[in-house]
Length: 253
Picture 1: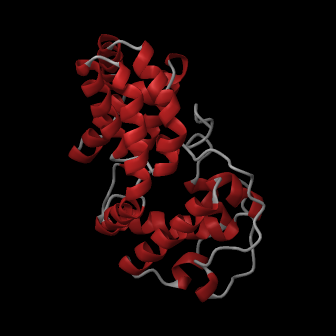
Picture 2 (picture 1 turned 90 degrees about the vertical axis):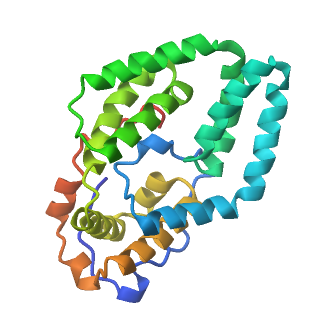
C-alpha cells in the first residue's frame, strides 16, 4: 500500500464510506486467512454474530445445496464432509463460502478421508517447528488453521499459507485492550490515507468495505477513540505498522 499524507477530514466523515469508488465487477472475496491480524473481543464477536444472523437464509440455502451434492457419497463420507463444511461455516462469510463451495464439493469426491487426516498431521508437525507465541488464543487459531488449511489450500501452496499463518498468529497474539485499541487506531488512519483504488484492492467488494467501517465504528466507541488519536499517527508510523513482509503475497489472492 502507498500511504500519502492527506488533509484531515471532519470527524463525522471518518467512518463514512467514500462515494463512487472504482469497484471491480464481481471480484472474489478475500480468503479468511489473508487478514493481517484479528481483533477478538466482545464487540467484534457480537458484530460477526450479527452478520451470520443477517446471512442465515442464504447460508441455509447454500448448506442445503452442498448437502444435496454430497448425497452421492456413502453415508459415512457424507457425514465426514458435512462436518467439515459446518466447521468452515463457523468462521467464513457467506460470500467466501459461496465462492469456495464448488471446490469443496469437488474435493469431497476425490480426496479420501485418510488423506485429509494425514495432511493435517503434516501441517500440525510443521507448525510445531514454528516460533509461535504460547497462549490459549493462539492455540485456538492454530487448531482452526490446521483443520481448515487442508480444505482451503492446494498442496503446492499449503506451506506458503502455513508460513503466512505464523505471521498472522504472531501479530494477533496480544489481545490486550491496549494492543487492540492501537490496532483500531492504525486501521482508521490507514483507511483515511488510502487512495480510492487501494480501498478497492484491499476490500474487493463494497459490502466488505461497508462492514469494515461499521465494525471500526463500534470498536472506536468501545475503546473511546477520539479523532485526535487517529490524526496524530504519521505516515512513517503507518508504514512501520504495515511491514511489507506481513499480509502480502497471499497464496490465494
